[in-house]
Length: 143
Image (cartoon, rainbow, N blue to C red):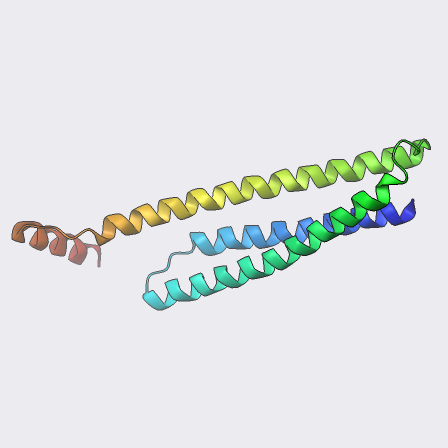
Protein backbone atom coordinates (compact mmCIF):
# COMPACT_ATOMS: atom_id res chain seq x y z
CA UNK A 1 0.00 0.00 0.00
CA UNK A 2 2.81 2.40 0.89
CA UNK A 3 4.44 1.53 -2.42
CA UNK A 4 1.33 2.81 -4.22
CA UNK A 5 1.44 6.07 -2.29
CA UNK A 6 5.13 6.48 -3.19
CA UNK A 7 4.26 5.94 -6.85
CA UNK A 8 1.57 8.63 -6.64
CA UNK A 9 4.15 10.97 -5.10
CA UNK A 10 6.58 10.19 -7.94
CA UNK A 11 3.86 10.76 -10.53
CA UNK A 12 3.11 14.14 -8.99
CA UNK A 13 6.81 14.99 -8.95
CA UNK A 14 7.12 14.27 -12.65
CA UNK A 15 4.04 16.37 -13.33
CA UNK A 16 5.60 19.25 -11.40
CA UNK A 17 8.69 19.01 -13.62
CA UNK A 18 6.54 19.06 -16.75
CA UNK A 19 4.61 22.03 -15.38
CA UNK A 20 7.81 23.94 -14.65
CA UNK A 21 9.14 23.31 -18.15
CA UNK A 22 5.84 24.42 -19.66
CA UNK A 23 5.90 27.67 -17.66
CA UNK A 24 9.51 28.23 -18.74
CA UNK A 25 8.44 27.71 -22.35
CA UNK A 26 5.84 30.45 -21.86
CA UNK A 27 8.56 32.76 -20.57
CA UNK A 28 10.77 32.06 -23.59
CA UNK A 29 7.86 32.57 -25.98
CA UNK A 30 7.03 35.94 -24.44
CA UNK A 31 10.59 37.27 -24.66
CA UNK A 32 11.07 39.91 -27.29
CA UNK A 33 13.55 38.56 -29.79
CA UNK A 34 14.82 41.66 -31.53
CA UNK A 35 17.61 40.02 -33.51
CA UNK A 36 17.79 36.85 -35.53
CA UNK A 37 20.39 35.48 -33.11
CA UNK A 38 18.04 36.02 -30.16
CA UNK A 39 15.21 34.34 -32.05
CA UNK A 40 17.46 31.40 -32.94
CA UNK A 41 18.63 31.05 -29.33
CA UNK A 42 15.02 31.07 -28.13
CA UNK A 43 14.09 28.45 -30.71
CA UNK A 44 16.99 26.22 -29.65
CA UNK A 45 16.01 26.61 -26.02
CA UNK A 46 12.40 25.70 -26.81
CA UNK A 47 13.51 22.64 -28.75
CA UNK A 48 15.66 21.39 -25.87
CA UNK A 49 12.77 21.97 -23.45
CA UNK A 50 10.43 19.99 -25.69
CA UNK A 51 12.96 17.15 -25.86
CA UNK A 52 13.39 17.04 -22.11
CA UNK A 53 9.66 17.28 -21.53
CA UNK A 54 9.13 14.31 -23.87
CA UNK A 55 11.61 12.25 -21.83
CA UNK A 56 9.82 13.09 -18.59
CA UNK A 57 6.45 12.39 -20.20
CA UNK A 58 7.65 8.95 -21.33
CA UNK A 59 8.84 8.26 -17.78
CA UNK A 60 5.47 9.47 -16.45
CA UNK A 61 3.50 7.19 -18.78
CA UNK A 62 5.62 4.18 -17.76
CA UNK A 63 5.16 4.99 -14.06
CA UNK A 64 1.40 5.43 -14.48
CA UNK A 65 1.16 2.05 -16.23
CA UNK A 66 3.17 0.45 -13.43
CA UNK A 67 0.88 2.10 -10.87
CA UNK A 68 -2.24 0.83 -12.66
CA UNK A 69 -0.85 -2.71 -12.72
CA UNK A 70 0.14 -2.56 -9.05
CA UNK A 71 -3.17 -0.98 -8.03
CA UNK A 72 -5.22 -3.74 -9.70
CA UNK A 73 -4.47 -6.18 -6.87
CA UNK A 74 -5.81 -3.67 -4.31
CA UNK A 75 -8.81 -2.44 -6.31
CA UNK A 76 -11.91 -2.50 -4.11
CA UNK A 77 -9.94 -3.81 -1.13
CA UNK A 78 -8.73 -0.52 0.32
CA UNK A 79 -11.10 0.18 3.19
CA UNK A 80 -8.93 1.83 5.81
CA UNK A 81 -10.10 5.43 6.05
CA UNK A 82 -6.62 6.91 6.28
CA UNK A 83 -5.50 5.22 3.05
CA UNK A 84 -8.72 6.07 1.23
CA UNK A 85 -8.28 9.73 2.20
CA UNK A 86 -4.61 9.69 1.20
CA UNK A 87 -5.41 8.19 -2.20
CA UNK A 88 -8.14 10.78 -2.78
CA UNK A 89 -5.77 13.61 -1.90
CA UNK A 90 -3.00 12.40 -4.19
CA UNK A 91 -5.33 11.67 -7.08
CA UNK A 92 -6.90 15.12 -6.64
CA UNK A 93 -3.49 16.79 -6.68
CA UNK A 94 -2.46 14.81 -9.74
CA UNK A 95 -5.64 15.65 -11.64
CA UNK A 96 -5.33 19.35 -10.74
CA UNK A 97 -1.68 19.42 -11.88
CA UNK A 98 -2.58 17.70 -15.16
CA UNK A 99 -5.29 20.30 -15.81
CA UNK A 100 -2.84 23.08 -14.97
CA UNK A 101 -0.40 21.66 -17.54
CA UNK A 102 -3.13 21.34 -20.19
CA UNK A 103 -4.17 24.97 -19.61
CA UNK A 104 -0.55 26.17 -19.82
CA UNK A 105 -0.01 24.19 -23.03
CA UNK A 106 -3.13 25.76 -24.56
CA UNK A 107 -1.80 29.17 -23.55
CA UNK A 108 1.54 28.41 -25.23
CA UNK A 109 -0.22 27.35 -28.42
CA UNK A 110 -2.16 30.63 -28.48
CA UNK A 111 1.05 32.59 -27.92
CA UNK A 112 2.78 30.72 -30.76
CA UNK A 113 -0.17 31.34 -33.08
CA UNK A 114 -0.11 35.04 -32.26
CA UNK A 115 3.64 35.26 -32.85
CA UNK A 116 3.33 33.39 -36.13
CA UNK A 117 0.56 35.69 -37.33
CA UNK A 118 2.65 38.75 -36.45
CA UNK A 119 5.66 37.40 -38.31
CA UNK A 120 3.58 36.60 -41.37
CA UNK A 121 2.20 40.14 -41.38
CA UNK A 122 5.72 41.55 -41.05
CA UNK A 123 6.93 39.43 -43.94
CA UNK A 124 4.33 40.60 -46.45
CA UNK A 125 5.92 42.43 -49.34
CA UNK A 126 4.05 45.47 -50.66
CA UNK A 127 3.48 45.42 -54.40
CA UNK A 128 3.53 49.05 -55.51
CA UNK A 129 6.52 51.38 -55.22
CA UNK A 130 4.52 53.80 -53.06
CA UNK A 131 3.68 50.99 -50.65
CA UNK A 132 7.37 50.06 -50.43
CA UNK A 133 8.42 53.59 -49.57
CA UNK A 134 5.58 53.95 -47.06
CA UNK A 135 6.57 50.68 -45.38
CA UNK A 136 10.20 51.81 -45.28
CA UNK A 137 9.24 55.13 -43.70
CA UNK A 138 7.11 53.36 -41.07
CA UNK A 139 10.01 51.05 -40.19
CA UNK A 140 12.40 54.02 -39.88
CA UNK A 141 10.01 55.79 -37.55
CA UNK A 142 10.09 52.81 -35.17
CA UNK A 143 13.83 53.20 -34.65
